[in-house]
Length: 261
Image (cartoon, rainbow, N blue to C red; front, side, top):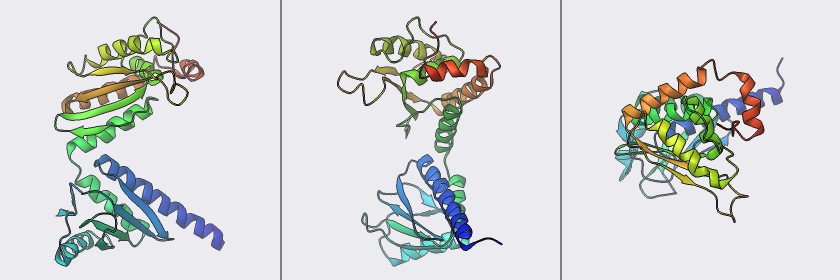
């Protein structure tokens, strides 16, 4: 027989999982929101900037009157999402959602993924492929031309070069800012096989901030077709037999710097 404490912990875990999945879907949709828990079975969503997409096929912004709020709430109820909607206290005419249970949060997450445009799906898949390859990226954005890939560390750039079938430059120590440009050049060469016009620029840390962040490389925008090709190349390179586990301790010991040329 489960104890009340154990049941309570299980309920919290279910809520936490539902919240994480909802945050992930919203981020893939290009929207930041505060997803919180106000009771053991309730999830709240604070949309604190204008929502540029629909929820259950209904515009979620602006909520100019009670009819707009009711229309959105009824549309969600038709999709079995039990949500109470009020006007957000964070910004004018925006929705504030209270989802009754974690299951309702999960159903809202499913709706967001179902209505996700191709650009959002590719952005999400790219992040997942890079993460699986050992590359962490930040500041990835969707724009009118495609997807701006974002910023990676010089160390992770060496990992990505290897995943894409390239070799490290002669001076490959990512901890040395003077090597960032050479690493950038090598990465640019690999990426331009898939996206010929992509911009790849070095951003070494200055002497005053080198203790706070690694030397970085910024990767610019690729079209959706190019992003799809890049995802395929990363997935293929991650699974390649030559990237055996015997190389990985060396990469970790050197901050994924590799062993030179």
